[in-house]
Image (cartoon, rainbow, N blue to C red; front, side, top):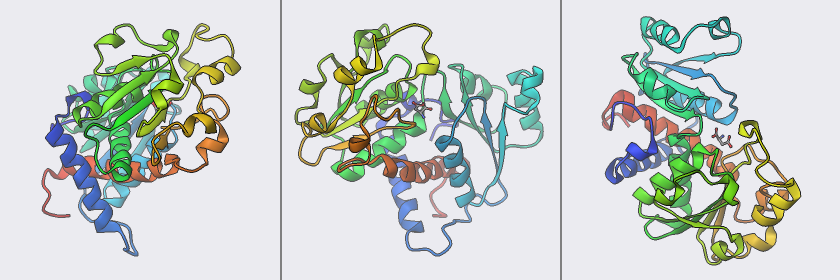
Length: 308
Ligand code: ASP
């Protein structure tokens, strides 16, 4: 394991598979227990340092750390000294002085967790930085895909929507490729980043064609909070070209699955019928998120497998 988890792109295949296998072992170790808790990280402190809004990721990390018996501190920028102008460096030094063993950081600036890792002795986990990466999301997606598809080698995964603003897309493309999958990105040209042709993925503008026979489709949220201009004419037009409805879902391979990292814009990138319907694993992604984050914290902080 590397010292920090900053990017899915940093993981080689053996490390990524080890993480996913560890998550599977944690799931087994906890299954059927009355008290769903392991004593592994007793006495360790995990700080959740969130400079940007989050529901599932923050709660998921909190639950993961608590299920490993760590002490958890939740720090959100709102209501802290950050709103008085404290710099990231001073915040880092404060955490360092308090002896945080791991810092889970979400920030609207790409690269903030990497910068933080230079200032603290503890392990840093990137919980989403700007439009750069969200490695634990990609790991929980890979875990979910592996459970349903049996493996990722040569599986065809289609990622659709706002690739330009999506750290989830970047992390997923890199990790899925590392794990042997074949990734197609589908988006309007205005929502693709410059240099996407260098990504290890095929790019298409034709969603129907890309979906035929695919093993899974991952819908991305249209990130309106990161959009300063108009990237498409109307929401209706976006849905018509790039939204997932029942007809399109049925183009997938017979056991093909539907993923979305959340939060969803229901009715825009995905219809409620598809989000809640057959083959949707969106709720399971949330459950798997806790297990995968337990594996990440466990491997970073305990560094061994013995205690599982
Ligand atoms: N929750 C994910 C993220 O933080 C996806 C999203 O916000 O659209 O990147």
